[in-house]
Image (cartoon, rainbow, N blue to C red; front, side, top):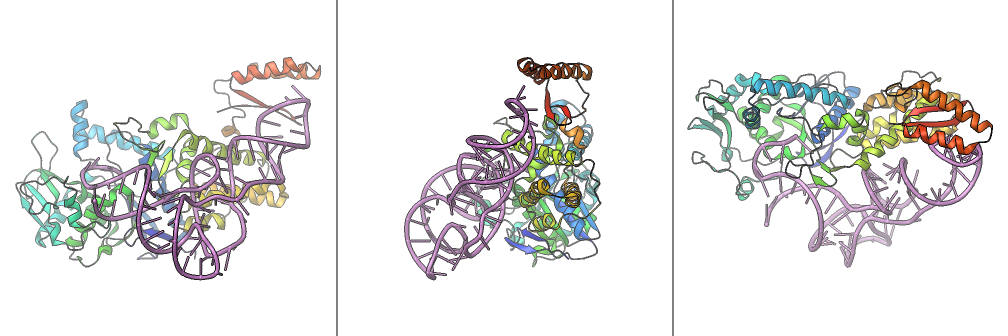
Amino acid sequence: MTILALHNTLTGRKETFVPADLAHVRVYACGPTVYNYAHIGNGRMAVVFDQLVRVLRQLYPCVTYVSNITDVDDKIMDAARQTGENIDTITRRYEAIYNEDMAALGVVKPDIQPRATEHIGEMIAQIEQLIARKHAYAAQGHVLFHVPSFPAYGGLSGRSRDDQIAGARVEVSPFKKDPADFVLWKPSAPDQPGWASPWGRGRPGWHIECSAMAEKHLGLPFDIHGGGADLKFPHHENEIAQSCCAHGREDDLAAFARYWVHNGFVTVEGEKMSKSIGNIRLVHDLIAHYPGEVLRLTLLSAHYRAPLSFTSDALNQARSTLDRYYRILFDLKDVEAVAGDVPPAVMAALCDDLNTPQAIAELNALARDVASADAVQRRHIKSALLAAGNFLGLLQADPTQWLGYGVQDGVDGAVVERLLQERQQARQSKDFSRADEIRRELSAMGIEIEDTPQGTKWRKAS
RNA sequence: GGCGCGGUGGCCGAGUGGCUAGGCAGAGGACUGCAAAUCCUUGUACGCCGGUUCGAUUCCGGCCCGUGCCUCCA
């Protein structure tokens, strides 16, 4: 059995992954709050954990991947107020768009995608457990988690309770027993979404939903909990506090999730994406200009924990890399591939803490070898390339289509053929200036031509 | 201020105590009427200063720079 090594934020080290139950690997990753289009940072999280789950499925017979949809949140309420739309209308719409956009990135939909609003009962039950164990208290319609009741608090982020207060930007409400305490439940005004609870009509705090949904759908402790690096604190820290304390497991931070995996941030031209800078890159917009595979490869071209600077350069490089692979597949289109396993070198790279750049280097090695390959090797290379591509969510398109051969959209094939014939005649009569002129005409139409021993081929350049 | 992460050749980007990362771009060559595509050749880089070591880009300490979190955030 291949060994999977993962960097575990909980210990700060790369560790050998051993599931709690070899027969059933369980993974949870924090999903989006659905009030707007997903940006490329959301996309990176989805792609990274999709790839991790793909690796796990190669290694283990049964994997359950849960990723939630946060559909109750103050930002959603703000959005509803601004547009005058119903909250459900907004959340359902952006949930659907999220799934479409992620599918375009080659992300396989999680096995379970629980909505927060459908787990209010579980959240209330967990809050009651926390109150019963004296880790939480009700005050003025709120319920708060009492951080001092959990001495191990801060173990994931390496941040102490004092550090959290030292930031001095934590809202210190008068009803908090301790400045570090955080909200489990808060009251809703009549015009805000709310649910009946033992503490009055209200809605859950942000952190409790993941604790409740992960436990319901995966059981405790489950194997891997993931999310963006920014969620380490306070979100994941608070999840751990809630879940461990609700079950009297204050002694063991791993009693909730055993391995914690965090992906790094996407920056745009080196800057953080933010509304104020106006540099947010939405997946929805990007897929109108770039094939999803180009975006996916861009996201996989850096190691998942490293920051990724999203630039047009990076996109173009990913595109030319894919063009190269597709050209090989095109050249090998008459070679019969055999269904096979993911190439061991690719698998080994991914099993080393999801080293996707190394895996891509292995793809390049295959591509390099094709030039000197004999018939048997060519068949092997095509098979390996397709298997690796399938595993990485790449190379799923038809090479002919990808490269633009035989594309009819927006192209008058008859015109192209006529010009090519005219150019061929010019070439035969050594009228090369006329031939080159025709090539420029075609180029202006977005048509690139390639003279080969078998005649002239043309393609619609992307 | 506190807690992290990172600084690798023009660019992107792995990795390692001594043994080629890889890609892109560039240069030279082959092929071509010229191109395109492809192929061949070509680059000895690891922020700074100390320390450990036979030997450090890789380990340790300090410093500088960049960046993220500490408030909602993938």
